[in-house]
Structure formats: structure tokens, C-alpha cells
Length: 409
Image 1 (tube, rainbow, N blue to C red):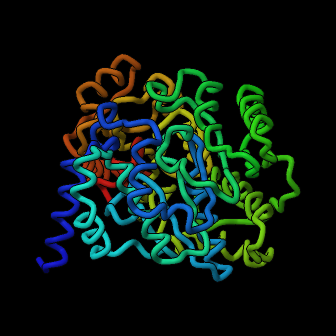
Image 2 (cartoon, rainbow, N blue to C red):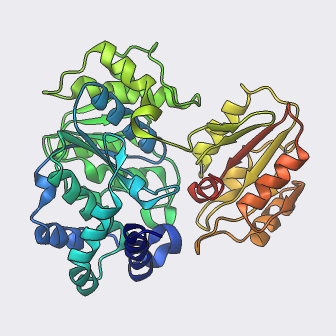
């Protein structure tokens, strides 16, 4: 192992071991509130004030929409920062400029310089990564940064920026232990990214959530725009597979139309949407990784996402469907199971994180619901079993969690 590789591994080990890491540990690592990140960014010289940004919240689609916006702006020739979470294979995926991940050396240097401060302040893993991203974007002089909320919005560490535009994709029942048990309550948390005078683009005009957003926008005098009420070109296409990406592409288009001082022609918009994977290296969104049998990876992990998967599967042609499934603990499985075809062959497993819903507990739920299944200790073992059982005309879908997809990539 090279010196840089060894130092990078040590920096990551410290980040993951010393700091509360929500993706891995769950509730005990969740530290809502902006005090820590405000103090940390002050310590860094307030880098979040040095670049322009677009801020995205929502239950589903915010990652895909963020990558679409980054790709379009890159296609137009701008230097574009992109902050997203969680990562799939490498921590550095969270922080990119023009599709290139932050360097290992930059991560090493940042951790070394601020380790003492971070230990003293007891910042969370997420707060550190947000501070690192903002510092990197300022240092590298990006023209604009696309910033994805981690969870919720109002108390999310990313919510110290004042963006050019705020974006809220949609609202579903997810992370209910933290954000509320109704869609209106969750909308209230996500509405927290709406800033005074800053336009907000809303991906859905829903009777339960729209009044929440309208009330917040009016209270802070923020112009608000519902995607479906904008003059959009519905013929534009994207290289991201999945029928649900059409709505995300329309939302990205609505945002671009409102983005002042950035020159983006209709031709550039279409080219950017067609080159999202090329420009940003996005993975795990209805991603085909093998053929005969076809193997698709998708990071859907809640009821709204599974409803979209159900619709997507109706457009696929296959002899037998094989579903490799695993979840983390905080998911409402009863809401998810209604979207799963009982004719599929199920391979149940668990992600390799502390938050994992252990496969024996998942199996109990499937037994109670009348599903036939087999169980495996790891996602790779489950996928291998599906490949062994499948014939070339079958379809294997791996889904249920970012971590399941990450484990098999």
C-alpha cells in the first residue's frame, strides 16, 4: 500500500470510528441542529459564503435531480461542485467537482488540520463531511455547487447555505422517527430549506403538502414554483434509466429555467441530461450491470420508491424475476411489501452496517406475509445464489438499501 493510500485509509478509519456516523449507526449518531456546523464553518473561515449554490431536499429523487443539474451546468462549461450522500463505494464520492471526486490527499490534509478541533467539538460524521465539502468548493473556486440535504432540511447541516434556488422533490413517509409521522409534518421539516427571498421549485403539487410549502414561502417572501405549472419540454430525455427519472428531468429543467446569470441553452440542457452518468459518475439508479441474465441495481428504500419500481418492472420482459433484498432497521416493511410480486423468487440478506435489519427478522416479516424466500448472510452471497438459479432470460433486481447496492458493486 502506498503512503497516500495508507494515510487515506487511516483518515477514513478515524472519520468512521471517532465520529457518530448515521448511515452506519442510526439514531444515536443523528445530531440535528445547526450550531455545530455554524461553529465549524466559522473555524474554517465561512467557506459556504464563497460560492453560489442550489439546495435540494425531498424524500426521493433528490440525488438523481442533483446529478442532473450538475451535468447540465458542466455541459454549459461551468465549474460545478456536487455534494451528495451517502456514498456507495468510496467516501470521496460525496464531494465532487465536475465529476471528479475530492482527492485522497485533500481528505488526508483536511482531517489532519482539523482533527483536534473536531474531537473537542464532538462534530458528527455528516457535519465534518459538509464542512469538508464547503471548504473544498471554496478553495477550488467552483462557479456553483449542487448541495443535497442529508435528512429533512430545517436542521440538516447543509442548511447554512443561502442558495440561488431551493428545490424540494417530493414528500413520502421515510425517516419518520426523526421527521414526523405524517407527510404534512415531514413537509414542514423539508420546508425548512426555504430561505427569505430565495425562489423554491416544488416537484409535486400535492394537497397534503403543498399548503405547508406555500405557507412557508409566503412567510419568508420566497417566490414558489410548482414544476407541473411551468412551461416545460416533456420530450427531453436522460441517460438515467428508470421511468421515474422523467419527473426528475422535468424538475431539473424547471430549476434551470429559473437560474439567473447562468447561460444554458435548450440544446445544452438536453445534452447535459443525456450525459449525466458521463459527467457525474452516478450509480445505483436502475443501473444494468450484467446481461443474460440481466442484473439491475437500484437504491430504492422506501414505499414511494418501491411503488416506482413496481411500475418500472411492468415494462421489463423476463421469464422469472429474482429479487435480492435487504433493508436497514427504520423502514416500514408493511408499506413496502405491497409492491412486491409474490411470483418473484426472493433472496433475503442484510447490509453490512450496524443499522442493518438482520436477515432473520426480515425473514419473519416475509413469512407472516406469505412470501417464499431463501436467506443469505451477505448481499454478495444472495446475488450469487440468484445468478446460479437464474436462466439467461430472467431478471435479477438488487434493491432495498444504498448499502445493499454498495455491497454488490
